[in-house]
Length: 212
Length: 295
Image (cartoon, rainbow over all chains, first blue to last red; front, side, top):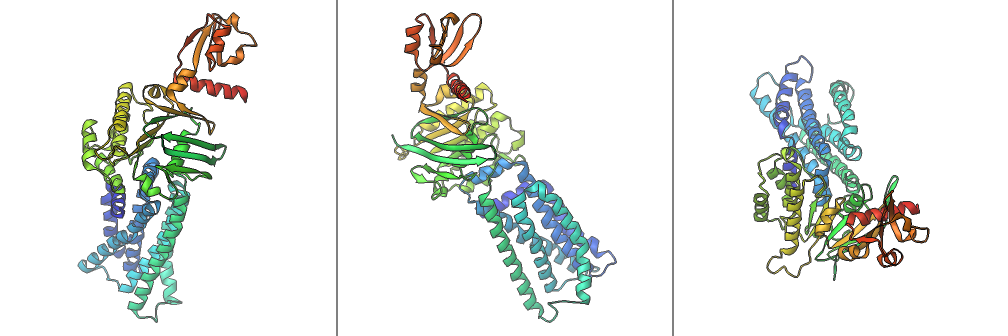
């Protein structure tokens, strides 16, 4: 059942599939060509956040345009928690797509720097924080109210992340003394813990929600 | 006769509207019409039955099971038709079916194909290109393809032309008549809300009326139609003593038209009055008008 709900979400945004696949492919190339420090990491981060947020926004847009379709699914034997779980299952899929595109491009294109495993884990953690904050808000407030906030968050993240990298490199890097493999595992585990906590909050909100 | 659905003491409030102590039961083997004007509480009641909105208090039992404890088991056996279908507009009929069908362990692809052919629906067609009639037929095809034993439908015939409405009523009759081998003993029922009461004149066995969030009556259609009469007569015969016999009274220069539950008493005081059998709509309006007069 989970597979069919995930598939349904992808089918909902089939019109935008080319753009959604193009984004993780093109953003690292564009940022990598700019004369900025940590271009590879920023490009990958940007690509991962955009791919995730735009895909989720289009899915929620389509659901907000057909609120009775969601009601029909909830009136069927699908448990409501499964509908939320399907949305959270999109996170690792979309993140993996971003990772794969970046990995292939960084190996194939000479000018684009490769990233250590720790960087992938850091981006996973940052992205899961963003997603875990965004999803319960989406279920609580609905698409229309959240879309403006999301746009602001994306723009702010685009500016703040390079700044954060600059500051953290100078003053404080909590992962500097930990072996790369250990910090990567810790960050990945923390990411999934944050996602699980967020999913529980979203399920709690959605199970109690009155549907149109 | 056993009940296929029982609702008792259901309460739910939304701002300035509330379902108040809603209590009714659907006997098995019956098509039950749920009537009331727009905003009476029909859709809210149906949504609460289906678990789409929470209830503040009350019990819902379907197939003898408590809805809050056996939700999945009950929903497996309910066919649902929501007002205007309830589909993702940009999906094809096949894609929408692929999203819904896995929810039901009893989904029957052969039945679905049969209904799609019967209704001349193309699985590759996009939902937003369907006419209102085709959407209603598609909703029925989805609702009837998982061996449902209770159909719950919200305004399924609203906005449809007479031909499509007639086809849908035929499908409902077929659903009630069609028992699969070995399933003859299993109860079946249809519960559908509508404000087009002419459909119920043709098909309903039972009627439940709701107004202002409260159940007004639940009664067999034939008994209800038998009890009420439209009365036409001379206006001069109306006086303070007999006006109370009528629930709804319209007067003009030529005479009066009223509706009554006491035809024998009316004939006793107005022997030359003409009595006619009312429609369900006449009775529904009589109830609404008498409640408004009381208020």
